Length: 304
Image 1 (spheres, rainbow, N blue to C red):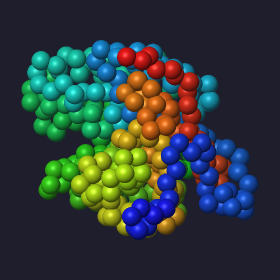
Image 2 (cartoon, one colour):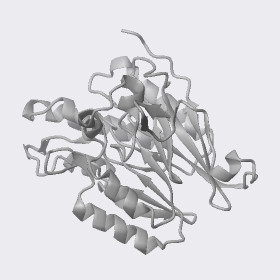
Image 3 (tube, rainbow, N blue to C red):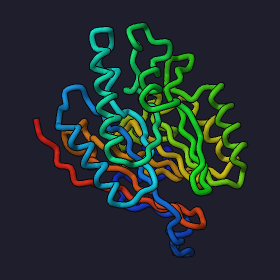
């Protein structure tokens, strides 16, 4: 694809099935499935149950449960905590997180969580918050972690570290942690990374027709180049992203980036840029090959 004469990596919005390069060329048959997991991003459980978000979220969980996944990997913006800053709204933030975890736990599906920008809050248990991550950590766990599952190494990152200009980033300290996590897994171990703010996205050029750097800096991390240069040295098979509420796939020199749509799509009021309410279902083969599909879980928005 070219925009204004500038080469842009190919992206697919709302494309139903993801295949590895060998499978796309017909040179390999799909391996027997070892396990599957779901990538749920941008739930945006809100304080007033607008759009009947609680029931919509339960519907998504019920849909994936019947597919027999091993776990759900959440991609951030689980709740809308930062929409309501200040002490007057702390009880509402606690209520949102409590409802979110109750609905998740009732599903009985094992889950892992990534922090998003709307998961932050400026207070914690009656005091000014130090990082803004405290309620996420209380209800969902660490803002960065790594774990192994059936021979695949998973890493969740905090993409909210402010750089010198106040933009989202991974940050130098976390970059070193990421390198250590990848080193500990080994260069031959397949790894999958989850973060909320994308490493790479074409949302603004393709969806909004804006190719200015300022827009890209708004909704991508500022240290994209450093992250890509680092993970290129390891067996990172997939980077899963959120934030944009669209389903987008980018293959950049062999590295795959998938923006996972949104459970809430347009904040529980219907599709956004042709992306229905949905999630990414990832299948891992016995040979550690990956295939995936975007699942519309059948929610019909209640219009305003």
